[in-house]
Length: 147
Image 1 (cartoon, rainbow, N blue to C red):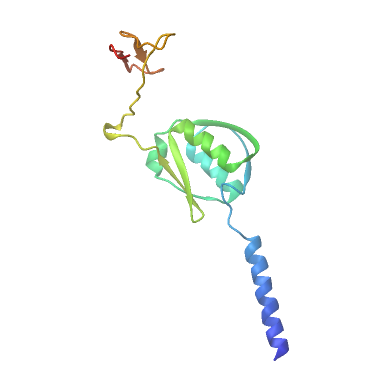
Image 2: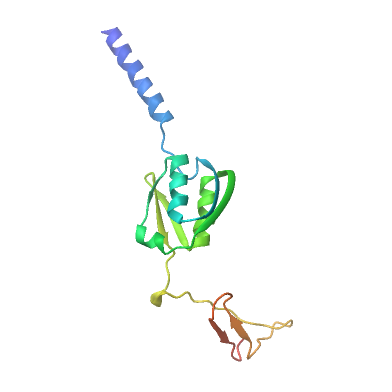
């Protein structure tokens, strides 16, 4: 009887040792080396998956419309690399239950971002009739009396 209990205890301990050593890979407990130039986001995610075994969930159609990326990182924390890439392409990644979900950043109604602020001079007074433009686009406005 004692031997049976001892064998079961040893088997159970061995099981826990194996289970702990097989803990899930996460963005926070892995590091990656990536040297990719002008690749699709899917190619980048496939490489991260290959190195880390992290599972990704995303809408393939949404990825097709995203800009290509260039990534050059050596032995960097996976979360840091992912955050940099996600910021460049206008997406976010969230990790839950061992799966990383990639989604576009939420935009307000109409699919446009709202930018607000006040243009002031050196004294801090509002400046009227100043043209403000979004770099790289044709979007802009002219300030009113409130700056």
